[in-house]
Length: 351
Ligand code: 5MM
Image (cartoon, rainbow, N blue to C red):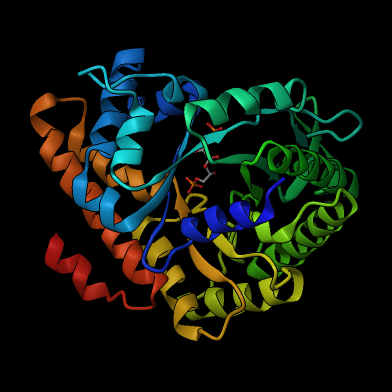
């Protein structure tokens, strides 16, 4: 492992004013997104859509540091035969790859999941590196709520320590394998915001998850200078009657991260997790306004960057320019948020 080079890539991923486009939807997830805009999900429509994003000149050159790809996409070529990976590189961004293979039910823990994909990962990483990937992503999913067995409630709070531990262990195994392959791991332990829990419960669970994750990273000798953390924010569940203000989310998320994330980590790139486009931008902006942080704070959004361009494009060739404009706008708003310079007025002007 060459840690100096890994650190250089990690720092480039969190360059001031830039963030990561998470375009790594698996085939099932992108179908759901396309269903919402009445577009048939085929190998070609997925390629056309992603090519539209990667050819959004201003967004890619000025606001996007890297793109997380799905396995299908990393091997695809644009309509004119140029590999999509090359389009990303030519725009000055870094190609990355999602390497987890989704989730499976966790035995003995009803309703909980473990992320899989470690088998043959070393060989796969080698091929992805040769194709141009310089960073990777693995997402663990932690749910807050009640465990269920056969659809019924078992009356036990989740997450269990078992789910937190096995997922942290897998994240660290993945991260160590990435660094051995000279690939920067994005470590993503996502605590879902789907439930009716309040911000305090999210804070408490995320703290357990992050502490466990960093303990496992240490045990498995992962070099913190050569990784990026992709966490959720401290935020109330979508179904909670008690939603927190932007200021509270920002203040609590910073307090939480300061208590769990070592300063050796070069950067933190948040997931959006189902927040609205503007909420995700406002929260990132408010955190960066607090300032005085040991790591760079940026975005690694999927839905909060892509919902608007997907709607504007709607699968029609004549809408490509509109889709690109929508993507450039969201990327620019989030770029401003990485510097604490975003203003709600800027959204209205664009509307
Ligand atoms: C873009 O969505 C990613 C892939 O999800 P699936 O493996 O479930 O298809 C997802 O991992 C994403 O990178 C993160 O969750 C962040 O995306 P959001 O939409 O939460 O910002």
